[in-house]
Image (tube, rainbow, N blue to C red; front, side, top):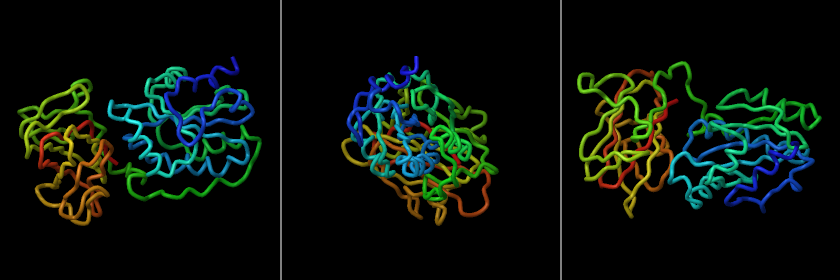
Length: 303
């Protein structure tokens, strides 16, 4: 029974930053398992803490394993996972879990999810989603048998890793593909808060909507500081796009993936930050227009 979670990693399809890790490699260490997927904004905002814990406690016997289990099909691409590992400076072991075998062994249901294993591989604590950082670090210290000041975490407040502005957030994560479609604008309420709509020639797929002809757009009526969207492309070439907010360029409130004129480029399947409001947060409409066919839109997240 003690080894049941240590054997779970045999289901990994690939390992990054390490040779494959099995029970003999992990037994005797405290293990923190972090389930993630590269487009998850909640994981991205949590990641600075996991990075910091790995560096601060590895010499004390902590092994962090990032189990990458994909939410969308395009996230199974090993090259994209490696890009994310490099982009976010992840230097701890990553188990690529494209077949959901590690996920299933932990009976997990969430991104991100943290599982805290003692030196025999028994789960002693778990946490789902963002937050609870101080308590989680104290759990790590208790399992390691140490007690000291909590680590200083770098990267907070920067780019997509910045914590959400929870006080002004009124718009929930929204999926647009057929399998989990929600909040598509009804004809009698085209401008309702938290609803989205399409203009142009689009097809609906299981996970996304796909643009069939150049110049199509997707609009969302929202209220939050940040706007993110998960995009991919079926075209061979990158696809330029432009955003407007209430019909105007975003100016200084542009996101990391757009400029002041609202211009951006869909270059790969990932999460794009379109907007970070620099002034008062209020109800607004964002519109994304793509110059070429082949854009795929999966979900919107806010913060």
